Length: 67
Image (cartoon, rainbow, N blue to C red; front, side, top):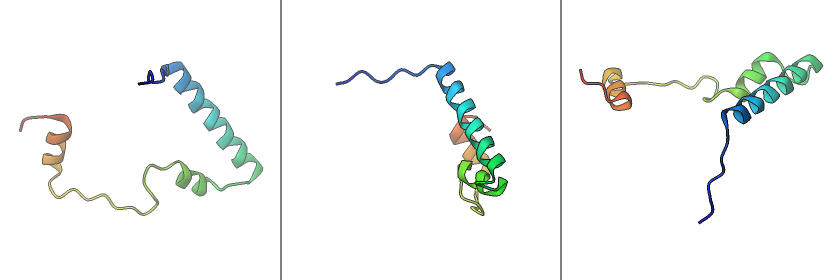
């Protein structure tokens, strides 16, 4: 089995800075609007509704916190 790729925090940070610089340049040139860029960079699609039936239970599961 191949060795998993190793990525440092510095590499992640550099990539993030480069992405932000590209985004800023696209905005400057008018290739995208701020709203379009926000949509591209968003984890969830615009207008997506997140619903928690029992938010406390969700937190307990996620963080293994006892009530």
